[in-house]
Length: 386
Ligand code: PMP
Ligand code: GLN
Image (tube, rainbow, N blue to C red; front, side, top):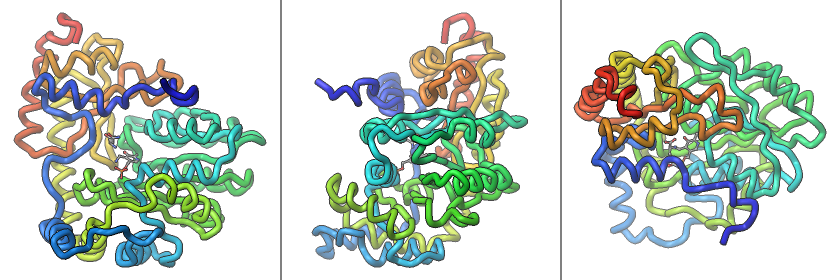
């Protein structure tokens, strides 16, 4: 039995594809998690916290040390920081705490699946506005968003750097979006979990720092992607006190607080592991090239990635038309897992042949994946209905 508002949701595509990868012993380039750990000292601190008796509830807003480290990293006051159970909880609590049932929330498609679920849980309606293709990447279509805004619109959810496309939205588009939000008095949830995974040539714009945006924006982020600890589920929500109050009210009854011992460890990482982070991103940049080349050699069209650790490839040149079918068969037939983009959309047509591959894996693992993917251009794809 499931309540009506959750009935449209099945198992997440990430859980499905990871299970397929395990079943077929495939290389998992589907769900986005790295196969190496974060900085050594960060790991040691978490261990020391556990053996050093820091194992009881944290304060409601989170461990002070982490709140201050997040506040410093963003140039905001510590009162504007709430520690959450990953960015995921920050997203759900923001929508539950700030959007009324019956209101509309605009998401940009392809959109991360947790947004849709949070909107449904809040009894609100999702309005999906597609990104616009610009060259080999995508950007925010402000005119289309403007056309979608009406008197019921409460919030826009933005995510840059963007999962699943790997796009980093342009400053100009985000400025125009900010002007629209101010003019139409809209709230914004800015999901910046990939804020540190930016490749040379790209610049990340923090939406809350644009004129008129601080007072209407909740920014969420997390340690998961910056410090290779997706399993720690330690994130944060940042915003002005009156908006954060609503987020706290929802959050406190979902989990009350997150895991205590990880918080001082993440505080350490934010303050002292910037060099580690730079090296990690430089490594990712090389992996991006390795996988892009491999996907191209396998016969796919490869889109540009300016941030995140995902690459979108188009399977149309392989003579294939359906990304879901392709991804369901790939672990068994080729020994690699990937994620179809159309599951993140309400208008699947234009995304049907787009597939996401994650490159946050050791070089030897990516090389083996690339070797296996060569099987596609050898004809296995077209002939064997991969
Ligand atoms: N937003 C986006 C766009 C993501 O890709 C993810 C997954 N890292 C999250 C939110 C959730 O982050 P967390 O694992 O910290 O809950
Ligand atoms: N954010 C990760 C991704 O996009 C997955 C998180 C999850 O499994 N929910 O791959």
